[in-house]
Amino acid sequence: MQQADILKYKAVFFDLDGTMIDSAKDLSFAVSQMSNELNISKPSLEKVKTWIGNGTLKLVERSLSDSTGKKPDDEFLQKAFQIFSKAYRDCVGEHSVPFTGIKDLLVVLLSHNIKIACITNKPLEFTEFLLQQNMISQFFTVVCAGDNVKHRKPDPWPLLFAAEKCGVDIKECLMIGDSEHDINAARNAGCNVYSVTHGYNHGNNIALSNPDGVINSFTQLL
Image 1: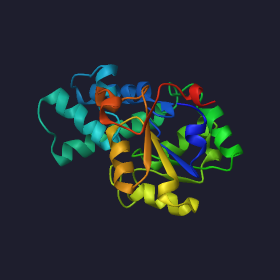
Image 2: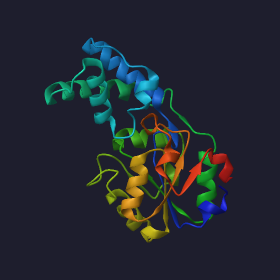
Image 3: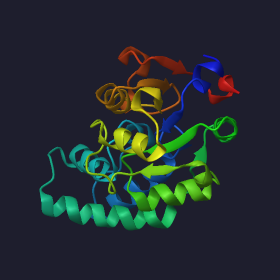
Image 4: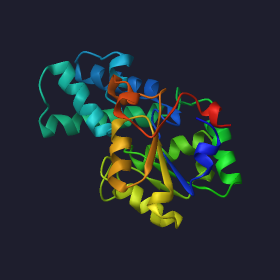
């Protein structure tokens, strides 16, 4: 994988958690705070990493199911989600850091007039905070989050919407993510997809999902 492999596209879409930002410790801390308040067992950081990628509500649901041994009813889920959201709002960004090379790569893309979008299933509130805190929000033409789009990944809708906002044909776009949802969203939309190996992907080897390219580190694209 070389820089030329990414500069041939007119727009590049990035996932957030596990792709641009290592946010697992903050999410795990919020889950632990929620578990303490609900008096249920706390999952490990490694276990939480395998639950990241489908939005924070799904993360909470998976945590509750793991701790209680059964799927939570809606009332319990919403109660837990409110506790989690408050805890996450209080700690978001404290332990989250950008993956090595991402800032420099965004600079390179912008210098070549390549449009950039963030496409994540994370709520917009937390997405914007992380982008701003890590001083990369200025690079993005559009941000598609889990609660400001009609349909979330793996549905192709946010990718097609981002392409339209960037004024680029979807076939000239590239999706970069860490999970099968990113791969499926790109396939459904009709664009190529590269996968990073430093992400979460529910604990599975992302290379086995046959992306169009594999990125071991963003530094290899600089």
